[in-house]
Amino acid sequence: MKRLVAMAAVAVCVAAGWPACAGAAEKSAGAPKPDKDGWFSLFNGKDLAGWKVSENPDSIKVVDGVIVCSGPRAHAFYVGPVADANFKNFEFQIDVKTKPKANSGIYFHTEYQEDGWPNKGYECQVNATHSDAKKTGGLYGRKDVMNTAPHKDNEWFTYHIIVKGKTVTIKINGKTTCEYTEPDDASGGRKLSSGTFALQGHDPESKVLYKNIKAKPLPD
Image (tube, rainbow, N blue to C red):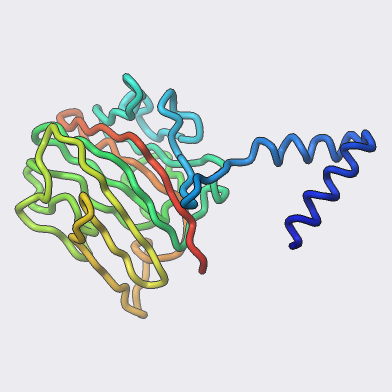
């Protein structure tokens, strides 16, 4: 009801020709809109609008409509308008393709950091055949998927991350690979809080592709 009243007020003052209200209307019209199921797109399929790449910007680019991570270490942080890039409880989905011996990761509850591996938030592992024994579908260093990945290189698969309260659920192609409940005494940067998402460019030998990125904020 409050939202409807606010919208009506904006409409009235725009009709009256008040400049401040016209600006508010333009801002409202340009606000992100979810689909019918409540999902917001985080990637336009054209460029990195809404994303900020750290450390080595040339390592993460858009090629033929997909985000390609390949090169010296870098991370692409979501800094766009959806939820003001600050998610607490949410669902997140992304389509991923790994090339042979590639390593990457998807961070959540993180924040922009110019250098190094992100200090804040959790990492969901992306790795089918890299030498690291921790494979796709695990919460890195907390509840790992060891030795055998739930997907193959050179094939697109869907990564689904759900955070509700203290519980993190990871699904690959609809199958749950990790369910982790954070203990009450968790401390340090690897702790549930709130924040944004980041895609990892791991090293020059790793090439990982991402597309169809979307998020659905959930109630606290």
